Image (cartoon, rainbow, N blue to C red; front, side, top):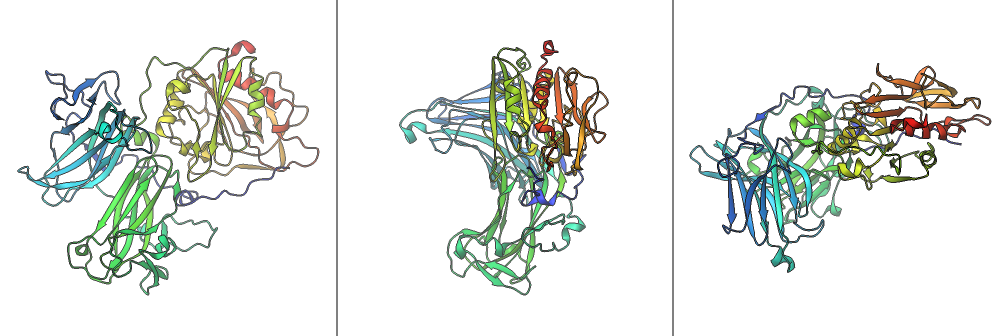
Length: 624
């Protein structure tokens, strides 16, 4: 017997957003226009190089530069820097006018070839520096920049908020790559860097909402917080057994205890480390660190907080100095804003510089604005990647190829059995969903060419927030250009897994709901009934009385068809989108059938119906 699963455990902001919704940043009034000149390298001079950009090779003949019209992220071309041997290449923007004390979002699109292998430094590196100048061009120092991976990557994005120091009037971004592979490894690795879609945009931090200023109530372990903010008591996140932090009671603590770096510890170290939060809703977030120092005089850094992520690198850094504190021994709050834009895990660390007692109480985290996929694309143009316009999905019956993203209950749905009946010449590629710090699609096609080589794609038990923008864009384009897609329901699937507001919402034949809407419950089971006339269900036999116990509350779009209903609600909805076809199965394999009852997933005709549905979405109409 199968029973309804208990609510799965979530950490961090995933819990935060179950019971309430932060308004999406419809106009994103906290971000200004791009200030960079020729940010996409579209304008060229007589030498065929980008206007308003300065290129330098060191030594002079060690690198070459060009505008590539075949490999680009946005527009029609990208800047390409080749470093075939020992040497370096740099590309600097025209100075950007800024104001001291203001914040700016810097984002850079890049692509790397050569470089080396993941996990091993091979002597080739790349990074983007952020240099500040006054109005006369005098240097005011270099701020935190953006590091590139030590290995080859397809188009990717680096970004961070930067703060202009007092007196700053100009900002210069410089991308550099150095090739020292022969010295490092004994053999030369010719390497290439592409740049495109760069941005410098003024950021106006929104005020902290009143609800975020309130004290976050403590929740017993295993409880579910309904607060719109999450507070992490750092004494419960103590790191390294107290080497850089000891737990101590404090009458001014938010709760009851704090962590303090020991006197004379003498080195920088991690005091506290939050859990690894997984697949956060994309958005603009704020972290507030409550802390104090023993001595507020001197110019040496006392500690810092950083926000890190699995797939987007450093998200924020907050460096603290004695002069930042109004008085010694008094708690103060310091803010760090950051954007979470990718799947994977993220977390927060608090560090001591080790030169004086540094006390940290809590870190409070909350979203300021959630971002839907299209808003992310407005914020980061080109981050969905580019798909060649001539690429088309497979439309041949032999071999009949399928791709199964196999999450929870894929075996109950009997997808593999159904696919084996589609053709004598068929092949099913399986992408298992691995649970861990984040949901990972193991072996998901890395390119559109690989994805488009399938007649039908099944998404079963798939948390769509675990898909990158690029992966969702590939799936949406696959359907629009003629591919077939079947999406299955479940605890974390469809509108309970980020379908609303995603790039996949437009290709879904159902109206999506926000948040995490409850499943419809049919106590004792409700019959599955044939809906609209359709070739998939024309010969379906319902004599067994197939039942459903839990289902998504689907609403079909006006131009869609409902193939099966349950309790008067759509159970399977299909639609034609662009040149492709999509089916959404809202029936779930949850419930506890009584003896003699036939749940739909054990219904004799279910496998045949799923086979026919696979044929239909793949455009194999000759079978009907």
